[in-house]
Length: 632
Image (cartoon, rainbow, N blue to C red; front, side, top):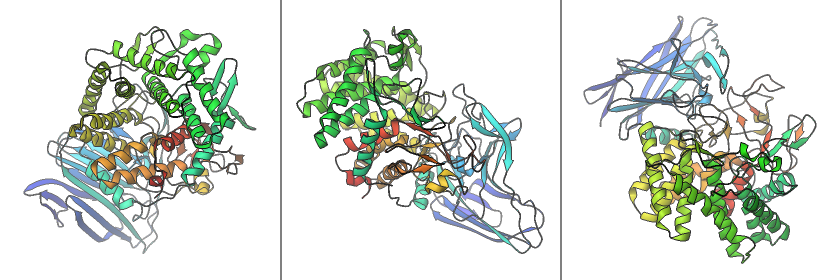
């Protein structure tokens, strides 16, 4: 398709069809001094404008709109709003307009700076700002109408009609005022991306690729892979490993109690998700394979056997939180698909690792525990393929909703590869088809971030992993295409740019770079290193498709996830961090508790040294045969 920009009317045409027009709203006394529109790729327009003022402007406000000539069928603000966030029962911003006022969000909340995206019947439009070629921070709004859709960028940076804080909490709206001196100039640079809708709810791939390519920069991880392995094993062994009563395993992590870092006192021992007990146990087995250290082998075996012997239920489920076993209150347990999948996948891996080193200690038991979870999933699968989200100890499905159930596809595929039993592959395919069908119909996934109930990133991870595994099993190109679709959705949660942080904040002092990191969900707008769990999958996707962008994205995840890992000398806000520890959350935007030094929530950290980042880094390293691809 040939696009044509009419400079006089500021309208964009595709052939003889009007796509939309660019509109400016600027204060009196300000003059548009220079304007340029360049089509840098087919359908991608770089729009640069310079404004000047002959008088002092105390309150400069500039609004740039692209008014698309269609009624929106699906819309997104990446990492913030997916078609209005109407799925779930959380308190995150719903819709694109609140009480008659469009939501406005700081560019920094959005994974592509200030990006808005919408689809009509035939065309999709994306608009975002270039933070490096613009003289001040900005915000964005998306305003769907009956006949038109407005994509808006706003100077100064503002959020309103109120500022989303977390879950169902809000603060007052804010505006970072801009003043212009007489004779001064003000520059902006924005990008407009127009693409024919090729896949409903998923035609933003071109915008994401372009935004990635213009911002891509090679990052060096804080440490080489060998050092990250050493630091991770040290943290697991010396800070997280616990022996208490019958329990031998790992704690969820450390919190600051005002004087020192102490193990979390409640909800301490979790099989997967934030606790990652079985994955950490496997890393200790792998550490033994690498080093021959008998202590590492014993810690791994202790942990595996503790969970296999004491947490296993008669129906095949396992008690995911060990605290209930220690307290004797086992009926309180609620077992979810994410934890069960983590347990089964890693018990299968433990069986395989022990086979490599010819250690038979409870090896078959670990395989039985994994198969028990798989057998439960097969037996309790709904007729439409849905597995459900969570179950009581008695096996009753408590919550059937969300994409989280797709996690159970992963151990089922593993069970099929190990046993050759067709029932596991049949059940896995039925489940996969159910969840991928919902994803394609909705344009988002949901309910895997267990401390929220909303649209999120983590629930798409099993779609990516299972797509790749089914492609390897069948060589059916459809699965590879769906792996890319899931990956582009995951990429909407990945930061495509770098931003500065206020002086005196932990992130400024750490020289933290948000590029490559991912945020959590529509309720949790902070960055964390959770994308570690699909680093290996993006490397495989790059290999299968021949597209290097997936390798770039994987390496950017790895580099970002190394930031904040302590070598034992790292001090943040006067608190020295234990060797190998790392914060769970990095508050890159207006989310979280105010920093005690600046009063600004932007640039703070969570002070929660949780187990899972360490577990996932070690998991990547034990599963990737060539560590050089992480940094080379």
